[in-house]
Image (tube, rainbow, N blue to C red; front, top):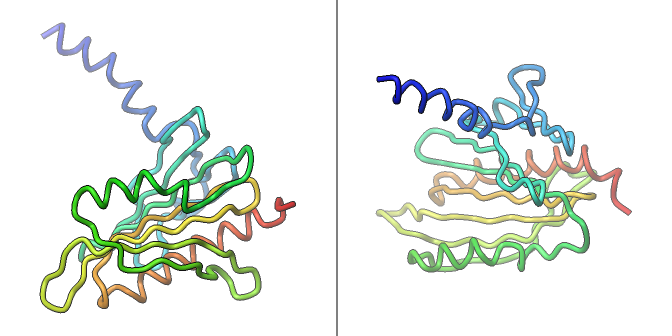
Amino acid sequence: MKLIVAALLLATPAMAQDSGDVFKDAANGAKLHAASGFVCPLQVGYFQRDAVGERDPKTETAYCAYSALDGVYGTITLQALSGPYDPKTALVPDFLELEATGGKKVGESTQRLGNPKSQVSAFTRTYETSHLGELRYRTMFAASAVGPWAVEVTMEYASPRDNLIEQEFLNAVYAQASRKFAASKE
């Protein structure tokens, strides 16, 4: 019994560290990414925030994970930039992983996302992972350098049912990034 209690006490700091000190509590249940100032609200449209955390301390990479009804997921990843950023190259590990599990590329483009007055140009690539009837289950990756930060979004959704929700989430994320980081652009 003492061994179990000791193991739990040793494990507790590591579990608390997952959400990490990289995020601070902010107004209305939001989480503030301390290094960048990016705010991950409790809700983004139909999405509820599930988790925040540090992905890689060496590269100052953090994430905010969201979900909505019917299995729609969105993850925002922030990474400090120390030089030029090529979104397509940065996402290659994600592409390879999805292709290895049977994902088929169905689209690739550059989209203008965010607020109409301060849009961000983001590289996007979409994969189809399966289908059931008229629903096409997709994973979409979007990435852009916004000021000194790379802002990457991964969405899992069913097309055409969730197309509007997917675009609303993307626009909300890049609007927030543009407000926070655009002034930092050279």
